[in-house]
Image (cartoon, rainbow, N blue to C red; front, side, top):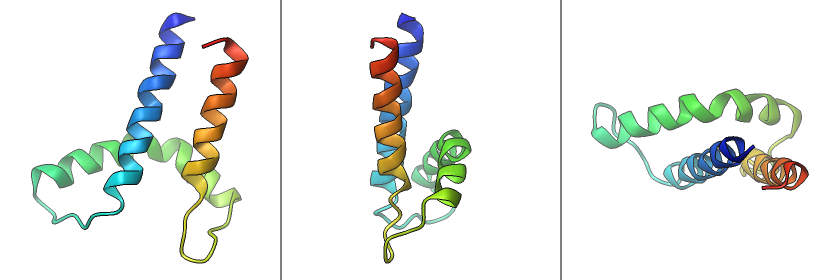
Length: 80
């Protein structure tokens, strides 16, 4: 159970990094673009389905907020 809690915390941090990185333009071929690509690959399996269900509000993608709340609900349910 403790490992699962740590993995959920790590995923929360990675998801937060994705949100922050989305605010900045990335130039292809840079180290930061490579890091962003890895972060997107890790988070997209969760974000993609949520994004298809939850529409954007204006030009704001609220799917990360939904995933943040979902992670916290899961953490609370398993006692993290």
